Image (cartoon, rainbow, N blue to C red):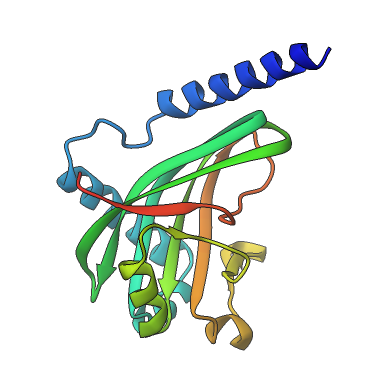
Length: 186
């Protein structure tokens, strides 16, 4: 019986990976120019719909924008997307974001997220690490009633603030915990 579940889990994981790869997450695009266009459109949408993020941007040392993360899972799941790191509103590097998960989950979704590095140390740790993994130390600024962004003084003093928005699909929840960011050459 355990062999059956092992094969079933393997097949479910492979299916989730294929589903993730098949979605339009930027894989196989025309490089940096297309990523930059998506990043600019994502930032314009975020600043327009969540005006509180303008203040975060003004105070941030750097901003990592992931315009489209595709996440899928059926017991075993994963997510992938590509984006850019901007300092003073100029792209300085490109990154991929990937994660894997196991547990009670089913479905697929796409979403955007932006990480605001609020201190020079947090930005430096991100840029100089050999692959940075998001953990429980990220504070989330969440959209609550009417598109207002909830950022209180506790969040504003955190070294990294994440904003997740634009969720579409049938998958419950969106979190960045366990997501690994790796510098790429598009």
